[in-house]
Image (cartoon, rainbow, N blue to C red; front, side):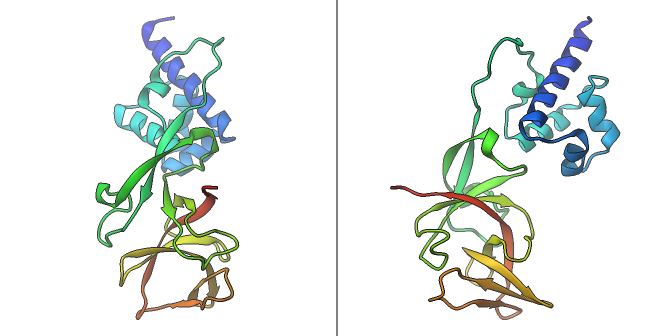
Length: 209
């Protein structure tokens, strides 16, 4: 096998492994990356080798290093579960990208196998408006996305105050409410007098004992 073929097959094998670990197929990956199915399949089958920017796009999506995709690994080695650093956000400036450096307080190591697809970040729950579902002080893992389904818990940026809050989304026609799980708190009506932006979907939380 030529060196060029070995390089293509190394990436193909690593790509297959990353997809298998996430129970994904070529069509799923192509859809997530907004690429054609034929392009991703050519990488998957070792027919073509992606450009460096596409390798970085793949690495970012899987939360791994580029070398994890490009290096050839012996088949008899059992890989150690990889971890990635997930940012914990503090105050969020309205005009900045969510994951801007100035928004990040610290990083939390998280096993890559247990992460959802896409970009993720942590938020710290403040107060007890989401008890008993989410205790005060919990670190909540958020999958970054611009909207969530009705009745899901979202990280929401209050545009008037630049504060991020965790609330359950409820819709009635064109009206959206931010609902606390704690009945002692009042729902928040979203509108032009109280504009918000959904940052992502709450996936899980961790809490200190």
